[in-house]
Every structure is written in structure tokens, then in C-alpha cells.
Length: 268
Image 1 (cartoon, helix red, strand yellow):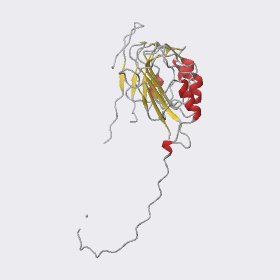
Image 2: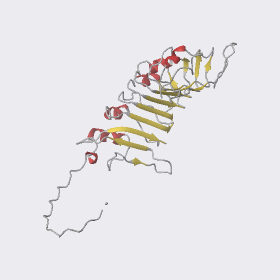
Image 3: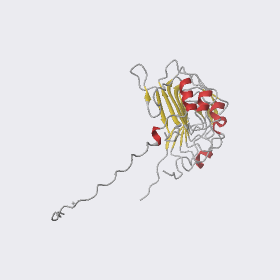
Image 4: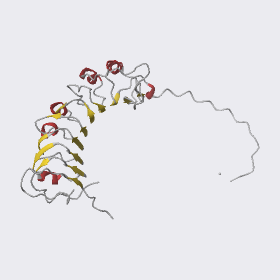
């Protein structure tokens, strides 16, 4: 028996108008006579799999510029910091031949000698599809992020991120920016061309402006909490048939909550 999932809604208003608001928060057989059988020929040793291929030389050079150790193949290795902190860099590569290519980079507790240049990131494109930073507050954000990315995450990293830089990531399906100030004139500037976006988190980012009047229809998760977003909740949100969770808490939203929010059938 199918059931209709419930939509999780979180709202926390700072009243910006006098209008009252409602808050939803094996058989054995005789052994035959022995016979002499020819010794089977052994198969030749199989070739080495493509996963042992070295990293592409151009991308290896990019790693050197990022101060990532390259004496060993960086692929599928954790590169720990000198302290007891978790690994600072996790590299994932494909199984291509004759060279492997980097598909994912994750930086955690970045060291002070790390510098992410646009040139290095460009050398890792177009194979690089996932880029993540966690707890890298003093790391300067590169002015240009590779548009090959499908997933981008920055949590407690960078002094600031540019909304225009994020807007160039038109192939994203997942974006998470939290506890990082984002400079932009509005959320639509960032999301306008992200037609494949599925999961959207921009929280505690000092984000101002209004909620866009329209969203891309494949969105399933929206978290815009702890910002300075103001104005009413547009009824267009009720048209997001795949939406599973919506968090707009701790903003300056005013007006009434559309009655149809939470009543639409959701695809899980």
C-alpha cells in the first residue's frame, strides 16, 4: 500500500510586518579407476588492470602546484596532515588507460601552504566532477571554478565566495555552501542557469534578497536557512513535485505561508 510522504518544513520568522503568521515547523559415488589426464596448459598472466595506470602527466603537474605529494600515484590515496587531524586531501581517479584522470578532490583542515589556483583546477578539467572543502577558512577561493563540476561543497571555508563564480557552475546537480559568506545581489543570480540542480544548500551565508519566483523543477532538497532573505514565500515552490525538504528558517520572511505547501504529493 503506497503512502504519501510528508514534506519536512522548517520555518522561523522574524516578523517584518504586523501581519500574523502561522508556523508549521555435494552425493557420493564409487571412485572411478584413476586415469592419466593431460596437464592443462596454464593461462598466461592477465595484463595489469587499467586502475594501475599512472596519473595523467598534465594533472600530475597540477598536483605539484597544489603541494599534494606525487612520489606515489596520488589516486585513491589519503594524504594525511602532519598532526592528528583527519586527512587533508582525498583524491579519487577513474580507471582510464594509459593514464588515469582525477574525478574528485576533497580538502579537509587545509594547511597554510595550500593554494588553489584556477590554472591547477583548469588542468584537472574536464574530468574533475566533484570538489569539496571543509574547514579551510583561511584558504582563498579561486576566482574561477571548473564548470565540469557536478558537485561542489564549501563548509566553513574561504573568507568569501562570489555569487558570480558559483553561477558559472552550470552543470551542478548538488551545491552545499554553509558558513561561508556569499556576495551576490540575489539567489537567482546563482541558480539561473543551473538547470540540473537537485540539491541546494546555501545556509548561514549572509545571503540577502528575495526567494526566486521560480525554481528548477528537479529540485528535491532546499536549505536556505540562517540568511537575510526577505519577502514572501512564492507559490511557485508548491509546483516542485519532487521536493522532499524545505528549510527557510531564520530569515526575514514575511507574509503568509501558501496553503498548498505540504499538501502536494511527493515523489520519493
